Image 1 (cartoon, rainbow, N blue to C red):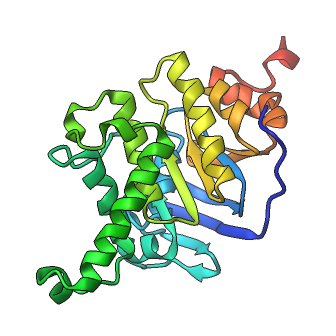
Image 2: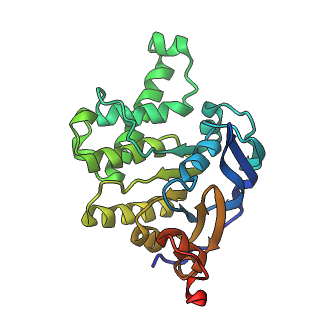
Image 3: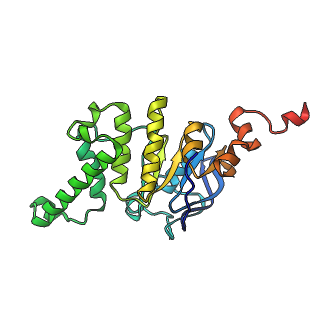
Length: 267
């Protein structure tokens, strides 16, 4: 079990969020929050609405109704790049690296998300641009070391192992200096040893001052690293609580095993 951490103020709030695509309701009145300094798990069976929830938080989709606030600001109709600048970063189920760029360059792209160097300064490589580029490079190398791929900084992303690509994507997201880091199934395709290393990395990320939102199918990983868990099923929140509470929750067990909650009573 993870060490106990004291959660701070509310960083992200979803209030009665609903998303409809035509006649399909992907999220139905979902409400939860994330406290500063915690690792929150967002789980549920396939099709539960987890990634849709990520997408509405990060501006990929717009909510049909309800409200989302991040660090006190309403996110309704806010462009994705502005949400990133507010301090929310994410990884994806399907790795989205710049495969023809080096690992170092990929992380520097993330660092550039907050660059205030204008086009003119970049074009003519002014002293301000050179200084900023040097700082970005140093930060990128620091993050590559942090996630464990510093030794492959100059290799093309396409040539990295699958596990290193996953870790590189986390480093690139961290390079934007997010207040909230959203990880979408970061352990997908990992073997048990890699999952253990990922758990250690997620804890290190939080210990560096980041707040983490984690979507993950591996229940052992989720139970071992999160402080609190929100469970979705068919677009609705069916449970919320500490890992031990969620593990023993009849509604959660029913959702994952595909049985009715009152089966035992009926037999």
